[in-house]
Image 1 (cartoon, rainbow, N blue to C red):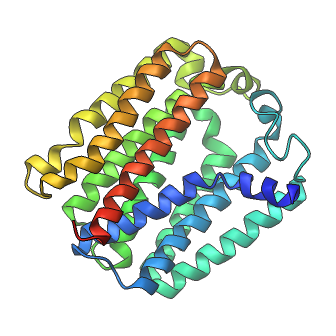
Image 2 (tube, rainbow, N blue to C red):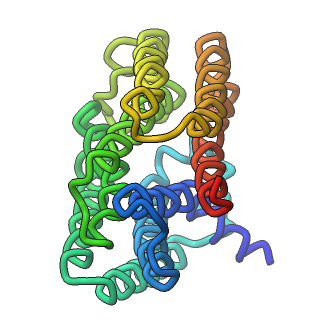
Length: 283
């Protein structure tokens, strides 16, 4: 049971789950209604499994820094071996490619692109600072676009707008997370904003990005893309972002900062889930 829990923890469930939710929303924004159930499942699990595989591989390659930054993680704590984590990575990649192939060749090619970006980041660009952050946010923004691709509408204006919002949220989180991981990142000669300019400036930079998200989030309502009820899930998301950002700025301990980064991510995902539920209930 402990082994299974460790393997599950390696996937950081809330992250690939959020990516899958973004895919479903991408389909919904592109079509204006929910895609067929089977297609939605295939698209969701294509991105879920590939995202999870990249995260597991990240832990596999990050053992040196995790011993300092996160010794409780499954691999440095000894709950899961490196061999077991690598096997899990391969299985997740296989299923991600298979599910996307069942959708279309374009969807399959997009998943391969995301896989390449994720692995290039893990192996070569994680230390590069902002460049590495940009690679991650491209992958995050692509979750909405993949939803559009899966239903043949990748360039829908709403899809692209929310891809931008998701990318900005993730960029803020990446910079803030780097600020919490300075000690371990020094060991791998990272060029993160936090290493170059210090924890305080990195946190301030992330807070500016989150502020931009708060300003942009109601734009679809003012442009008439959605009705007034859209402001409910977006308001929930914005409250989580605002609260977490304020707490993040005030945080003194890295462990405390990580807690609020995670809260921000969960809150953002919760807002998206509320939006989906409202659409399912035809509100």
